[in-house]
Image (tube, rainbow, N blue to C red; front, top):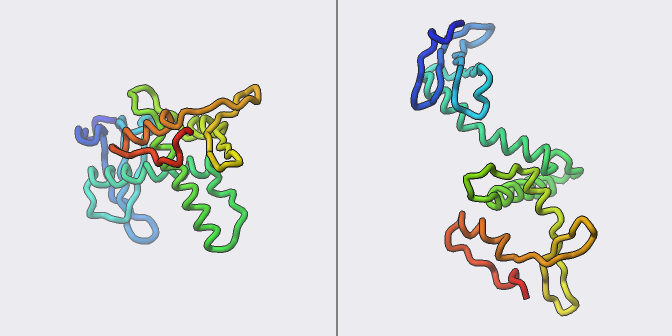
Length: 180
């Protein structure tokens, strides 16, 4: 089907065309997207809904709203072990889900704020894995990084805290996390 048959929506940055489709069961609305500015822009996309009252633009907006959820679940399953918990008790399952969600949120907050490409969840996780907390017999905690040679080097907590402070405006570093 030629692109000329598709209406261009500047607000969506895409060409779209909708069809009413009747298959076995209730009718559905099929919206076809071409040449759009979404992260999956290289492909022609076919969106189906049973909500026939949606306009083409509303249908595309609904689809795009769910995209961050798709990104979260892909990263949570592939990088943060969402599906690997070997627990069966409802409270343990819920705890695992909360820990994965909080970890994902924390990794998003720790991403640099610069216009340069952002770290992926995998890269953020890889950067945080070498961090360790050492506690002295007196109870003083110190954050260190395990180097490739097996050495421990001190880490400035202020530097790690800076992206959070910038994103969450006015957030102060808790005193017990400071470097002694």
